[in-house]
Length: 298
Image 1 (tube, helix red, strand yellow):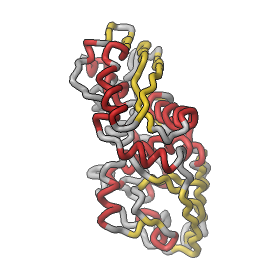
Image 2 (spheres, rainbow, N blue to C red; image 1 turned 30 degrees about the vertical axis):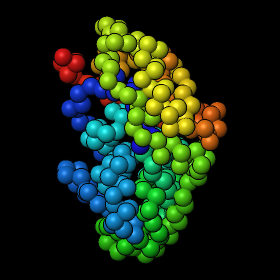
Image 3 (cartoon, rainbow, N blue to C red; image 1 turned 60 degrees about the vertical axis):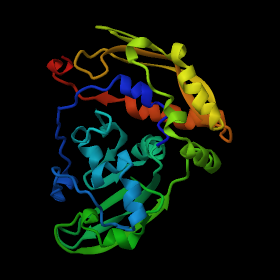
Image 4 (cartoon, rainbow, N blue to C red; image 1 turned 90 degrees about the horizontal axis):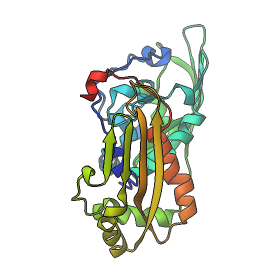
């Protein structure tokens, strides 16, 4: 994975045992089985390479394509609600904001974002037509999704009886970063991306009831050498995460100073940070997060 901010994420990992059910009418209509989640999907043209790639994609979420309606039930996802990124009418769904919000996280894992748009009309229920705009689906680069494979899939049938019409298009969303940059970054070993990680957070972080401060400057050499040995350049970035809710996972103020980020020499650095690193961090840390039982904090 190209997990550029994994160190910061690991600093804030907390126990996640809270489940929330924000039921959605269309998802409920599908009688989606939330436990256990599906391990394979049938609406793409499957091949072994595709299946292997999807194992490493967090946004594929175990094959459960509607995970953003139930985000708290998959612990690989940010523990937040995605309602504000979806414009939902009675039968019309616009996922444009959600797709844009998810793009960086998809590419971090080596996935390719697809946009699915169209409509289907049910023969029963008075001829109801369900409409989707830019439904986001992140899958491995070897996966092929077609309108015909969607039409043949139970996961993509919203009618309780036969359909009168089914009209969808599938588009591959352009990459946020240059293909040469992406290829170089994906070629880096874990040591180049995450450093020779043999340090303890207590060596460079201070924690208290009001938050934390982590300054990576004292251990920057652990990251710089393996990065440069593989042809990358080491950059440093700082960020701050805060929440005034005492029941938030990120309660308090958490400062990250001089975070090491290894970037390939073929990359446009400004584009890489503006359109990839910062949006990925936003996906992880910005939004309305679930409240938790204070007892979970120990």
